[in-house]
Length: 356
Ligand code: MRU
Image (cartoon, rainbow, N blue to C red):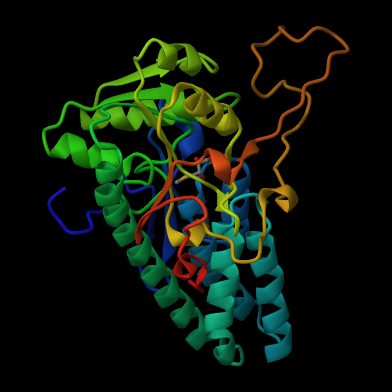
């Protein structure tokens, strides 16, 4: 980590080429850790499908995939031809599909809406708009990379002397163009020679903690211990975990935090054991339009459980309930770590909710 804002060592997403001939290259996270495969995407529909099957995932990366997906959307609309109005309608239809590919992380619809607004004046000139959309996405990418570096510094400070740190899901170099959000402070402390020990909840049902967090930390040489979902409270009681830090998919005006299902339980356990519960997120994750967590649409998965239960373990006639996210009330958050600093609940700067 020598640069002021180092790039993700995992390069989970990269635009290659110009708007006319370029493509979006994605690391297929659905295949990790068994296969490290990159996909070159040339259509916005491919990007929508990749978002939906979690090949590209995590709030900041979803925002970037949406923004770059718009370049493809505009290029496709232009190639279809027809009147300027027809081309614009084609673009808008694709933009809507990108914005709604997954419902919970606000970064995705925010980035799509902001990029569309910023380039709307060029709607009559498809080529100029595609060029402008590419520049907009590249600027967002740089903004997110710089946010990661600032979050690393502020988070390292907020952790104080805590070195045995629990995280939930995956909020690292796989989901940002930098070194992550929740994991960024751990990377920084490690680079400073501090003896950091990460603890990762396995993260049911899709195992982002086991498959992704443990994988990326191991590659970086950071000791990481994976624990079964629900084990953390007992480990906290034994003093083996000193703090928790998680990412977020959406942070509401009142400070409620929407993140991977199971986060709320981690926050409750921290409160019960008097441990810090930190939430690390860039300002693209703050939702100016959402008063509290109550109205946030929580993605629900299939409901038949067969995507993740061990084959043959679900008794006949038994349903499963599969919310992908939960809401942690602001009152349980010790501090929000953003590119602007470390903020207490009830003390979120208005600048966090400013337009992207
Ligand atoms: O369903 P996923 O894997 O996209 O969920 C990801 C999370 O919940 C992350 O914690 C969140 O997006 C923050 S990523 C910096």
